Length: 250
Image 1 (spheres, rainbow, N blue to C red):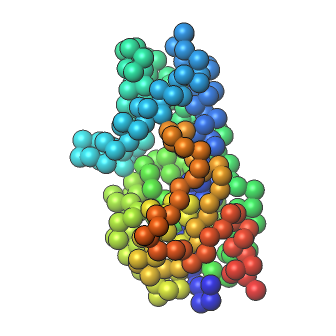
Image 2 (image 1 turned 180 degrees about the horizontal axis):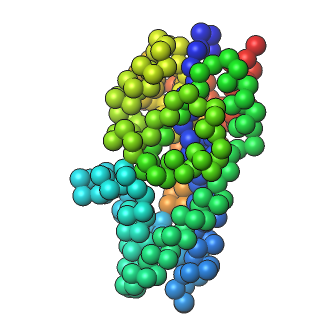
């Protein structure tokens, strides 16, 4: 880790527990507002099945421009598809579920316990930035909720750039803003496919953070993402943010 001058972080499930917040929000939402005759557990199963069907469509021309600007449209469509699977067509219930899920997810969102300490220490020595995929409004809302704005020299959001990781253009922007050589930049992220592999190929150093909690409610497995055998290894693999400090701070 010698020669690092700038550190970019991913946001969801790197600095904060997004999927933990999502799981808690889904249960509360379906307990309070789910249709009669279905348990929260059954609703989550339908949500997961609808997610696996709908998620690939979000990047299509029909949905992507709307998604970039706001998560509201695609979140409502997702909930509509959940109810459709249950043979329920009710716009009022759909809207209530979508709105309450957003509120509860934001209410449950928390930084990982060591995040503030790590950001504080690194800020004394390095430039700090954020590169996050997702709608412009939702990601800005998360940053404000978590109270991390003052740590960040640069913030790059998919919804604002109109492209997201792993697109090369994202790394071009971030490198130019950092004012460093590529090998002087470190990417810290939880997603091998979106954060780590593209950063490696771009010439950045990488810290792949892997936690047992990093499993979405739509997953068919209980393990976090693994590295394909034919893909390059990160500079380091860590289990918590605090493991960065001895690597970067003398």
